[in-house]
Image (cartoon, one colour):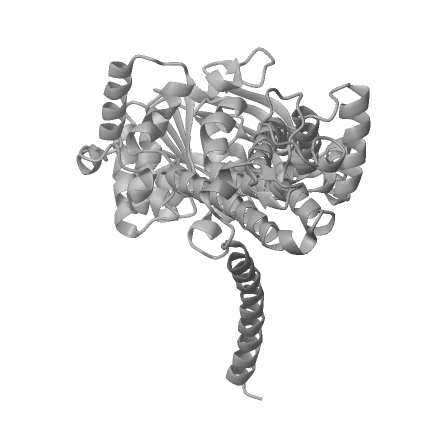
Length: 282
Length: 248
C-alpha cells in the first residue's frame, strides 16, 4: 500500500474517533438543554423547593454549591500551589520528594466516597465542625488538592530553565525568580488546573454526602458552620428518592443544566483571565 | 582581574576541567575556543557560580576576582552575580516589556527610585546599541523584537546592574550574520568599560573581537596567549590543527 493511502486511513480513523467523542459530548449537552430549559425561569433560579421538592426552585442549592466552590478553593488553591512550588522548585529530586510525589498521585486516585468518610471522621466528628460548609469545603479541598498540585507542578516544569538561569544571573534570589518570573509565566497553565478542580468540586456528590449536604433546607446559610443544599446532591435526591419521581424529572434536568452552566461560566471567566495574563506571551 | 589557580571541576565522576590556571586582565576581551564538550562553557560559568545550580558537581582550586576567592563561604552569590553579568547562547528576554526587562536587575536589587531606573534603562539600551530602535516602544513586549534585537536587549539587561565583568556564552550562535556583526561591534565598544569573557564556536569571531584567546580541549587549557599569536603562530600542534580546521 502506498504511504499516502496509509496516512489517509490513519488520519481518517483519528478524525472519526474525535468526531464521535465530540458528538457524544454535544448529544449529552443538547439532551440536557432540551429537557431542562423548559423549567428554567427566574422563579426556578431564585426560590426554594416547595411541595415536598416537586415544585419551586433550587436557589438554596445554587448558593450552597457556590459556597462549596469558594470554600474548597480557598483551602485547596493556596496549599496546592505553594506545595507544588516547593516540590518542583526547591525540593530537588531526592527520595522523599519522589515518595511525596507518588503519594500525591495515589491520593488523586482514591475514590471520592473515601474522602467523604474521612471528612466525616476528621472534620465533622473529631474537629467538631458538624455537618457544615467548613467541613464540606475541607473535604472537597483535600479531594482536589492532588489535582491542583499536579497541574501546578506541570505548569512550573513547562517553563524552560533558561528563564530561571537568566534571572539568577542578574542577581535575583531563587524566591524573587519564582515570584517575579516563574509564577507569572506559569499562571495561565495553573489556572487550567484550577478550572478542572472547580469542575470536579461542583459535581462531586459523595464527599459532601456526610459532611455538609442537606436533603431539604430552604433557608440560606448564615455562617460557615451551617449546612447547605448542593446541586449535585439535590439532583441525586430528586432523581432517585423524591416523593414523586416522574413529576420532578424536568426539575432534575433543569438542575443539571444549572450545574453545567455554572461550571461553564467559571470556565469562561478563567479563560478570560488567562488571556489577560498571557498578553506578553507572543 | 580574573584569576584561576589549579581549577579542577567534576560532574559526578566526570573530570570536566583539569588543572586550569589563567589570568584575565581588566578591560580586555578574552575568547575561549575549542571543540564541543571541551569544558569552555563550564569554565566560563565558574565566574558567576552558575555551576552551583547543577547537582552533584565538585570544584577544587581557586577562582579569584580582584584577588578575592568567590567560592568562599562568606561570598553572597547574588552580590557576585551583580558584579559578573552573563549573556546566554539563546536570546531569552523575560515575558515583560522592553523597559521592565532592562529594569529587572535593579528591581530585584531593591532599587525603588524610578527616575534612576529610567536613567539606567536608557543608558544600558544605549550601551547595547538598541536605544534608537526601541525608544518609542519601551512598553511593548520584548517578544516583539527580532532575535538579534532580543540578544542586544539581554546584553542591556546584563549591563543595567553595572557589572564590571560580562560573561558571554556563544552570544551570537543563534543569530543571523548582520545581527552577529552588530553584537561583535558592540563587544568591541564595551571593552572600555567592562572585562569581557566570551565562549565561541566561531574562530573568525574569536580572531576578530578578542585580545587573548584560550584553546580548550578535553577539559584542559591547551594554550592561552595573545589572539594574534594563537591564530598566526601557535605553540602547540593541537591548536594549529584546530584553528586550521583539521578536526573539531
